[in-house]
Image (cartoon, rainbow, N blue to C red; front, side):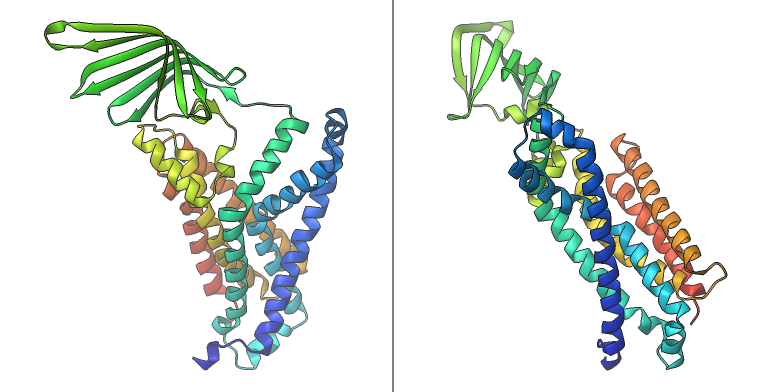
Length: 364
């Protein structure tokens, strides 16, 4: 077991790995902030965004979001860059010639990938979602001037035997027009309440049904009809369920994602693929740090004609290939043609195979 303890050379490589990675991330984030500010400064001025809100509500939350977004790409580039530099300074040859196996050389890279992967997972699962709430709210207020859009023609199962229908939900008025709720037992309609509109009360968490008519279907085709101007009722649905919220899943922690997916499935809502994909991506993305690190070391540990530039060029091409393939596979999952878990993990499986081939062919 002693040979797997970190030694001085391991800390040397690990320091280079993490230092290059964080420097690259800092550089790209600085450039991104400058370009983003140049693009949005007119919106900030026109919409009179406070300077403290721009700094603390927007850019302070913008930085971790984009840093985590670029993490897989810059793990690969960092490994390619400093390993290639070590190879051309004959440091890799010296390490291997001293009796260190190529497998043992991988240890500090795996440790570095574990540190970055764990950090990335904590960011995406628990830190970035609440930060995104503030950032997206700022964008809606001072950049795009958008608001939540109400949905139309909503058919939703809110409980095992309870269904609602809403012709239109107005986010501006917070009113559901042509609202109806049906209670079904053993495939038979037991009762139905129809109202011209329904309004949600935030304090009582009750829906006020206006101009309502209730029909109870009795035996032998008989009906009992009651009606009124106003009726407060408890329904397992909230206004947020009737609104179209863009990138809503980005504002949820892992626990909130699990609860939302479970709740929507209990209601019989089938369109939860984006939320499931987001959940799986938060686990798959940190794992990619190991794959890309192995690929990077295997590629950059040998001297080739073309120098460091060739290594970096191949590394960037493979990184973008990984991102492109991941985007294509998740699109299939959203459209219902592929399992969300498989769509998220298949790029990792394929590139793990590529990493294994590169590792096998790497100089030992």
